[in-house]
Amino acid sequence: MPDKLTIEKILEPQPAAKQVENHPERGAEQPATFEQPKSEEEKKAERAQAQSPARAASLPPLPVSSTGVPIKEIERVLSEDLEDIYFQLPPELQGKFKQTGEDTARKIKQLLERTTIKVKKIAALIFAWLKIIPGVNKFFLEKESKIKTDEIMKLKK
Image 1 (cartoon, helix red, strand yellow):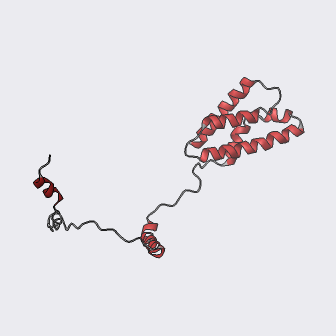
Image 2: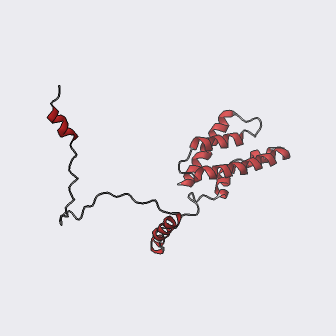
């Protein structure tokens, strides 16, 4: 059975917390206080103050295009060594081949502008474009898409 004296000691009110002393070597310490929530106007004023002209002038300008590879260069790489094949195609297939090639070049440019370049996607786009050519060996298509992908990656660097 607990002693009555120890229970009373536990239930006694504790003295108030000590005042924090100012020490010159540590700086003035103050107890934590809770701030009142700020209104929208106060928040806007703080943001405006944080975005002063001096701070904005120190930031470098953003680049216009991260790749620097023009779409004409991509189209040039795609069309290399395909002139003979293109002119042997029927006229309706020539139009489809040309339009799909331009769409493929745009898609490749978008892929090149990303932070991480997915080389397999570029090769797959080129492979799908070359499949329009009738009667071409699958291995030839794979080889050509690989060569053209490597050339495009050289343009990127």
